[in-house]
Image (cartoon, rainbow, N blue to C red; front, side, top):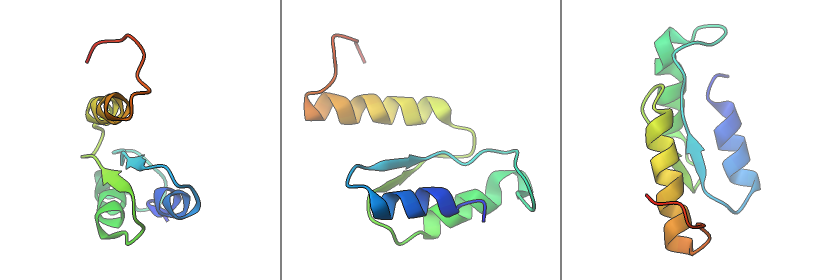
Length: 77
């Protein structure tokens, strides 16, 4: 159940989803490995999976996506 949210969300919306598994959680999180495995094995299109607790990498990817689409403001990469 740890990795179900991003998979369901990616199936419902047309935008890409950035999955960031966390090392803490409920149930058998196994240090984030359960959510990471779910993210990597997901068959929903449009999911970009980061490493466990890699919020910085997710932010950089989001900025690059915005820069390519032309929606980024004046902030520098």
